[in-house]
Image: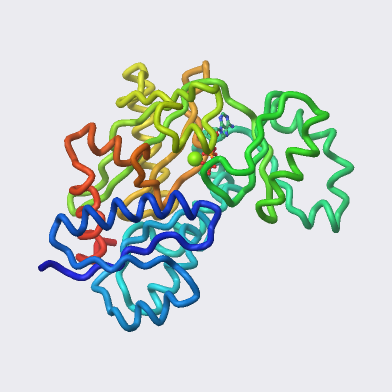
Length: 316
Ligand SMILES: Nc1ncnc2c1ncn2[C@@H]1O[C@H](COP(=O)(O)OP(=O)(O)O)[C@@H](O)[C@H]1O
Ligand SMILES: [Mg+2]
């Protein structure tokens, strides 16, 4: 028998069901690979469970708040349990799109023009009186409104006229304290996975998603048949090279380790724009990281073992 691995999944985030699907597959893969697996649905009993189980490492199959924002990572650091994926700071930076987009802009990484609104700016500072300035600030319609801290396109609305903006903002702000209004980029939607191992960074082939409904929303992400995937993405060589370079740069900029998945859109001008970084990418049947891995001959089981070994072997 190999080491004992606690697979953290579920939890109370809005992406609980997705995480349970990721977690079950991870548990199966680790079991088949000969590890002792302890599946843990994250509840208020997580810490006592980890203390009594004393796993050699934790595989984080959580998505969304607390699993992806540095919270569970901080708990695992405190308990001295090595874990898969980026550390506390990288997780926190990537989880907050308002912060990560600032970092992109300040470091010359293209990201669509945007403005950030917090509930406090509305309630305490009268920001609602300036909504008329928003379209010009982001380059006009259509635009997209989304929670700064959320995943799986929850709370996201594509807005094509000014009258829709207040409701879209209210909707996004019902998911958290900050919302982003961003220019909508028409073009190829990409997910670019980055792995790092003892031999350095490896950017996997970009996956292109074409949602048959026209919007890559929650249903398109997780319902087989609702989205067409192209691996590698259908890009010119020069654009492909730039996409790959950017993904590696973003991974390093945020201080990620082991794995990240950089979501991008390539507009009509051929310039890849970075939307966000995921530090605990989905591992479901329709997920993009496993799809990219399979395209280079890395099976799902091998991918899971590679990430687990990175944690066990202390790869920073
Ligand atoms: N500015 C944008 N332009 C075009 N499409 C976008 C834009 N923002 C989001 N999307 C679409 O919505 C999806 C989810 O948005 P994303 O920023 O990745 O947030 P999350 O995945 O955390 O919910 C993207 O994969 C993309 O299909
Ligand atoms: Mg995304």
